[in-house]
Structure formats: C-alpha cells, structure tokens
Length: 229
Image 1: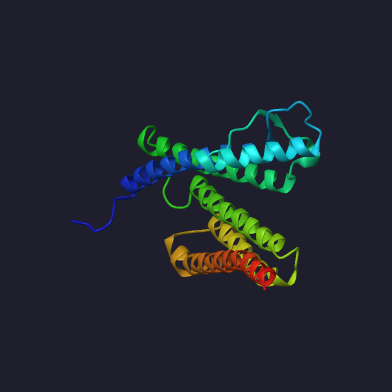
Image 2: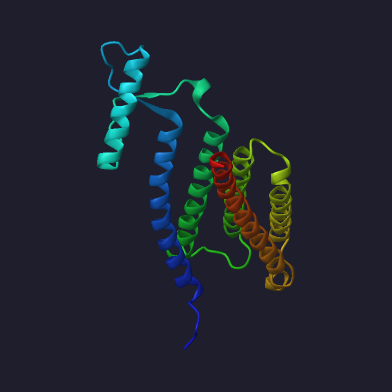
C-alpha cells in the first residue's frame, strides 16, 4: 500500500480544502471592504455639531462597545473618495481576484480530469497559472506587511530595508520559477532547479513575515514605555 495519496485523489482533497478556506477568506474580505469603504454615523442629537454632543455620542459608543462586545452604530454610508485609503483597497481587491482565479482554475482542472477526461499530464497551463497565483498572493500579502511596518515606524525607510530586500529576492524567485515552468520539459527540471527555488521563496517569505510582525509589535510597546517614563 502506497504511503502517499494518488494524484487524482490528492487533487480532489486539495480542491475541497481550498474551497472551505476560500469561504472563510471571503467572509473576512467582506469585512475588509466594509472597513475601508463604509463609515457608521452615530444617531444624531439635537445639536450634532456641538463639541458636547460629539463627546456624548463617543461616550455612548464606548459604553455600548464595552457592555456587549459589539458597537451599535447609526446609519451607514459610503466614505467620500478622499477618506478611502486607495492602496489598501487596491491590494484587497487584487488579493480577492487572484484568490478567486486560483480556485476557479482548480475547478476547471478537476472538471477536465474527472468529467471530460481531457486533463493533460506534466506542466499544463492551468498548473503553471495556479502555481503562479499562489506566489502572487504571497507577494501581495508580504508587501502589505512591509507597508504596515513602514507606517508603524512613521515612514522610516531604514526599518524596511531588510524586508524589502527579502521581498525583492522572493519576487525574483517567483519570476524565475514562472520562466522555468513555461519552458519545462520534464520532472527532472523541477527536482533539479525549481525545488531549491521554492525553498528559497518560502524561506525568505517566512523571514519577512517574522521580521515585519515583530517590528510592528515592538514599536508601539517601546513607544508606550518611553511615554510612561
């Protein structure tokens, strides 16, 4: 009995798990869009423009948040364009489009393999594109981590030199892997060249994630400590 899954069974299991995770991701994506595009307006008082009324509304909102764990708001409206953070919105949309493309290609490949019996072997365009979308998804997310670290340190260029170097190396590995996939002639090429490239890509990605997350968490902590002392 083989210790590994058959390729066709592994494909079905992978698509099933990917569909579940995509559903979870889509829920978070909807919340991200709401956070970026929608603003909640507290219920208006008799004189909403006065500072006292604004403080009163803020106090009510804090009380509701603390007592129920959620915030009860008034009317919802779309933010004006000047209040929307366009880079964050663009990256969020790109991540959604790229993730949707990946799972759509997985469904097409499953249909070709199990329904129409036309699935190819070796390096097919669907397999190459799916692999590339995974790398693009990681690079977009890593770019946002670098951006967050940059903003946390008051737009300091020095703090992001290392993660930017890691990001550039990862992007280079992605492009090189895509080139090799397009021009691949067999499995031997993958094992000889592409496997080390994949290891480099994921190693640099993990390093970037650890660095940016630690730095983004460290700055507010030390800033509060400096303020207290």
